[in-house]
Length: 325
Image (cartoon, rainbow, N blue to C red):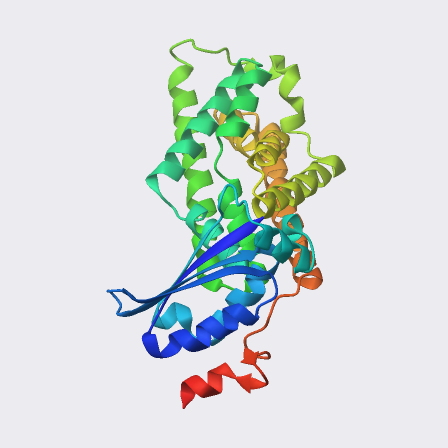
């Protein structure tokens, strides 16, 4: 798998950046367009590099302050037919499926962690679907609620924030979860309260729901399933396998548990409400803990360059010191 970097750099920095790109293992193609950037003024450099080597190169570009003085745009071509690209991938260490571009993960989870109207709408709809499935004893509606629920985005962002120590990301994801779930449960409880006098479901609806007992019966397997789902979800985000992420949504009961809390409180089933609240807490903790473990594992096995310890050099000369002069 090849990655294409488009670098916008000041003219006096372009030679150092170009040498850095050419010296990077796994680089297949490099193009230098002098004066191509108008705002900000400077050059444009495009690089095709094996995904396994992209993180190391990006780390070195951070040392050269390319994101501050210009920009780095990252994209993945759907198809690259090139003998040089094949040779570059063969020379790059590791496998592309196991490589992590940390800036990409941070940006992706950062976008998913924001408290937006669309996030709240999806969470409200999902919790309402779960509540309908609970009072009608319909597992199909509950599975639909699991798929619609957007909560994995903030959970993944919380894990990334903890590993990367990005407190702004932690606050944003905590806000999305702390506002989203209580609001969804309040709206669902209000809908359930209004539905009772309309005769939409009987008062003993929870007594008849044998198919949804797993929601308010937390146990050891609740945490185990949540941990496995959190690990699989983070792996699917890193490897860009969306189909696996859908399976993760179906396997955890965060949204159904929230819906059950709302309905049980309205019907006075406080023990079941407490059980489903515990189920919700176990799922949230299990998902985040497992996602953190996956990210830490990838940091240990990866060859990520630390900008504070390694400076890009060509021929033994520091490109950073040359820039400073």
